[in-house]
Image (cartoon, rainbow, N blue to C red; front, side, top):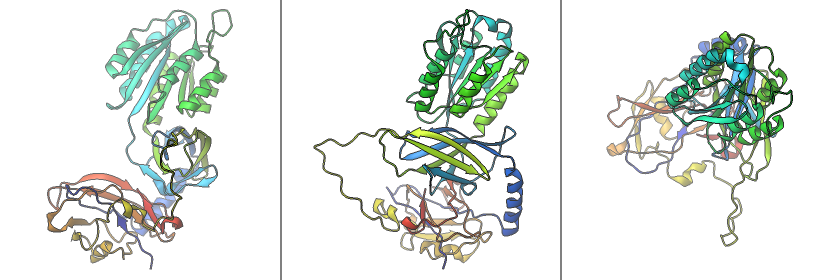
Length: 439
């Protein structure tokens, strides 16, 4: 019998937990969705903008899936394939809400920008306005020297710094990019640098001005793993360099001869950043400072980017030796606590059918379109907390559950409910865990 279940691990008992399992669309709707999906996938492009390893071995991919530059929305874990060093990764999770963005807005304030400065300032401020309240932005201005004009992350201060820029001097383009990336070093989560320039790195006599080279910039960007979005304006830009910087860091290169179009280009960058997918998986590789290649596939399109595993500190020589690895039981989370959805601890309160009651024993076969949602309560009006959701997929099948949403309430079985996450299992059996996928 094909079995699907949900599990959790109990922690301290202080909160009433109510679960709502949302299964996929009915079969005819799912068929329609697949047809629409194939049409949407035609001509799609995948770009891995950033790989965040601040919580290694959890690896977070921030990626753009687009067609003709417009982000494609509504994709889930089953739409993607992730490979790390040519090895498929399971399970993967698509996090529905993006984490806050740390951005650096880098503006060319050299003398050649004088006639374009008003448009450049307006476009830069419009980009700041596109950011979410929780996002942070720093401003860097550069001519002969590179200056950090606003570093606190506050958007109002950033806009004031943009307004105060004056065009004068030569162009230390590479030093400005290097400093911009350096500002994001050590900051976890989602990051981006946006650069606006109308020229090349130049000391006024046709020679490079910067102490750093473009290769220095790219090396640091690989280390920090941050995408650089380059905006070129005018007819004297070093388009080859701007394109190289953008493409090799996971950003985008946008060019216009007319300063009046800068707002539109910044809006496109804002749309792409807001349209990113946040995809998590857990690597089984060691934290030894080595480089690894990650590939992300959607439909027929692949995106590729490398990351360097963080160098995790070794235990001291006086520490106890690490015991030999042991084979985990089919439900590894049991070591952390106990299952909270069992006949001894929980009971079914409301559901569209009695099949949901079998979820308490794990002996349940919920098929596509069979159910909508169910509410479980805990016996004796006890409260519960959990730190994991487990879904068992015993074999690949088109009727397997595609997503489960978990909601909690401390008031009553009728709510109000607060969502704690939507979990999308891979439609494949993971043999080493007995079919269980953990979130």
